[in-house]
Length: 295
Image (tube, rainbow, N blue to C red):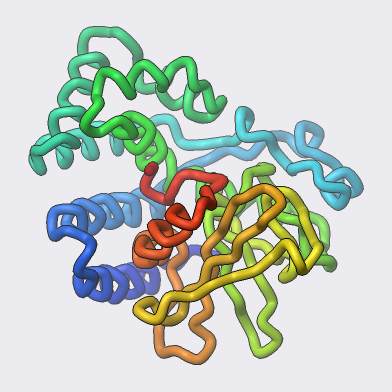
């Protein structure tokens, strides 16, 4: 589906308004998300990416067998835009103050001193290089995921633009997938039930591509034994449920707005349903991916 800035803007405004009614999400966090989401929305409309040559992408038969179209390390993105957005994001976090603002200031000093360049930051993120990011947990202990958040937030608009273009290169995926994204091979961030039949779709934690997955199967380990798969809901969070797997002890949240007058925006719905993460963790289950906002 082609990106529509006006429509996306209207959906964002409605979702932000809805999030403001959540007692467990602070005003400071809401304001930050509002600012970041609008910066990303504007960038999404202007991102410029060049796709790899067809010969550098996985062939259709390999994709149907589970190989991603493009690996994460080779995923295209707009370096110029990401650098500009990184600067804007650092400025916003510093204005906000607190642990995030302090951590953003430390990151800014590291860049200004030449400790690393924005391009080195982006390349390390794309390669999922923990040796680059792990030291920052100790350097910014009160906001340990700040550097990961800044990198992904700056890259996200052009990554999503690339994923939209790359989706046109996918073969006809008639059968639902096991769990990983057919474009980049990453695990789902969240899933959703759609249409009358309740087809289950996943939103990729990395490139945000949406694709259909098996309804009765763990998207992390592939478990299909119904005795090892279950789900629970929380009365205070209508429209959401948590699907858990007792084989790998992971969980994934699932959106089901089919009978509700609500707009689905998976990245913000992940935050909207934060209370369910606490419940799942309390029962001994873990997320397979970071949240949409890096924690």
